[in-house]
Image 1 (cartoon, helix red, strand yellow):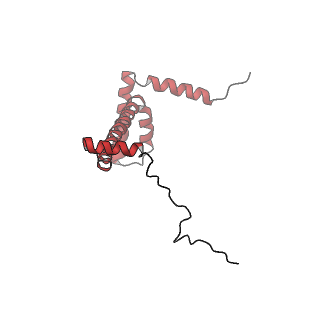
Image 2: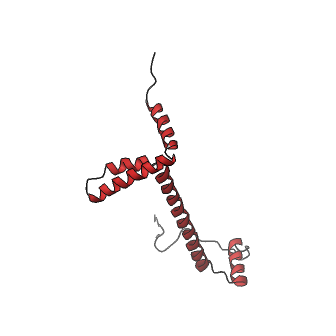
Image 3: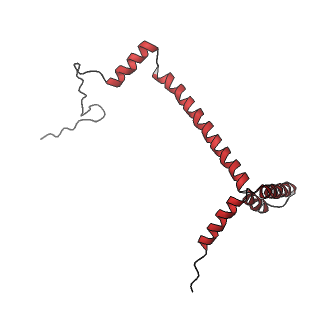
Length: 133
């Protein structure tokens, strides 16, 4: 009795079936048509398109971060003061601390600290437990 097993290195148990009468793949046909009529090359043109999309995404992300930073700088100047007090003392951090205090006073004079104060007061009210009678 002989048990023969196919060698996976040399023999493939699955043989591909190629039907010469089958219609071509629709996407492949579209790419071939585009390549012949307008000179579209999928590898080169898609790489260029990916670079354009990546550039747009980088610009959008940069603008979003800059907008958020400016918004926080204007409407959350108290946090800048709090952060500057946590820095180790030296001449650079003393300058940052003085500038943040001046910036906070200027924003308070204009009245731009009011939204932050309202939100902070409501947040603190939510943190404190209700008093029992």
